[in-house]
Image (cartoon, rainbow, N blue to C red; front, side):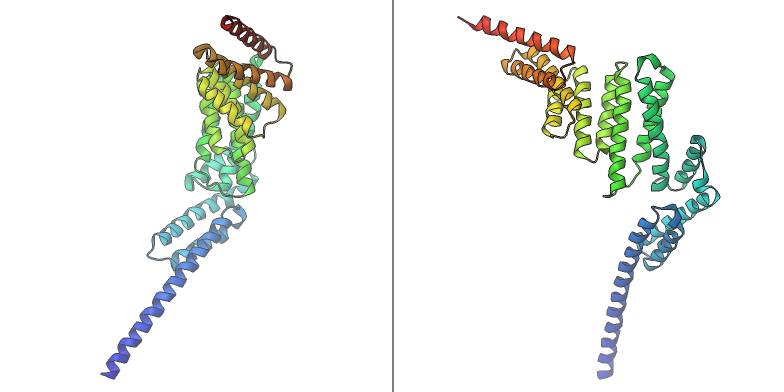
Length: 314
């Protein structure tokens, strides 16, 4: 009987020990996956990343995370082969696009390829959109091409794993800035709905408060041109409340605020809207006196105030 009890006790010890070993294996495998994720962020360490994912897959065998590690190892092995054949020696826009697309077919979320292709798209957008924004260089075909590149850029980065690190924060703001360049180009030709949609998409990428505030100034203007005056005043005020706008954009934000309240006053005849329009336009001109449309609108609002005062006098 004692032998039987000892046998049961010994079996329990083995089971408990085996369970502890399995837990340790899982923890070790998870640490390997975390390390491999960091290593795959640089093409030079792809070999190490693949090896670590495979080791993790062995330790996590039978678990969903183990299968995921195994799948990732195979994808990265394919990416490594493409880099081995070509890699950083690829030059020229067409060759870089072809190379990055080949990598992204294998691993659509491979961060180095997204950043490399994203840099190319960013440079193309920045140069061409600013050029086409000048009516002297208006070209409908080029305008559509830039819009297409922005859509490619947006689709590309929608697969990117943004991490809490400086490079990724910079990329978020860079994408937001690109959206403003494209939106400005579109607005020059009266395409305010498309411009607004572009800025709103850019806002989803913005990672710092100052870039968010700047984008809200642009969005406020587009809402104004689309006759949504409540949204115009809301966004312009939010941008000003941030305290992060540079002087030129601060002047523009006050101008947008004045425009919004002017048209709200025209619809409502609410004296509070009139007072806010006058105050906002005056603030804008104090910062940037060379704005004839703002000055003319301020004069019109002051005239309206005088008329209201005269009409209300006994």
